Image 1 (cartoon, rainbow, N blue to C red):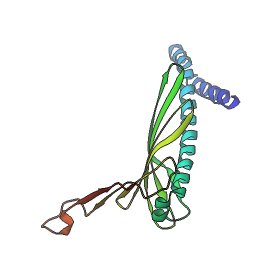
Image 2 (cartoon, one colour):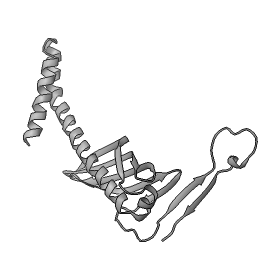
Image 3 (spheres, rainbow, N blue to C red):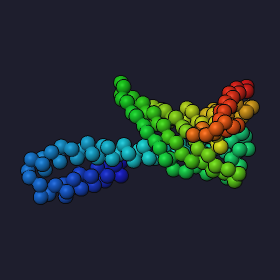
Image 4 (cartoon, rainbow, N blue to C red):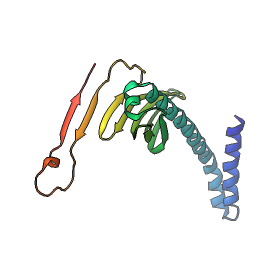
Length: 180
């Protein structure tokens, strides 16, 4: 609570300092906008904190998933997200949040990219979907932590692009396997 108040005061004093030589009308608008800006700053801090927790949860999920561990190797590391988005909605006094993020992952064998979808209410966010893409092979990681079998996989072989002439790289072979 003290940090929130300090951040709010910092934003308000920063806007005041920025607008100190501005005309009175602009200063008045600044005083009206300051609470909105401090609220936005607080939301950004909360989102960053939530994203760090979710990235750590994703790393743990990957580390305990036998299939991900066999592909990536030991000592799985999750990078900061290179793409992320979130939305929040307040209904009947309850805040619902959805976060989507993409981040790099690496292990002792190879690296890849994870796409994550998480959602929650009132600050309790959990991963709903985690998809690992390594070398063109896509694996859905079960968020429940179950490792009973390999799970669904989607793999693409071949190449896409401007190939002149015909050859084996002109064909894309896609196969969906759902093993339960």
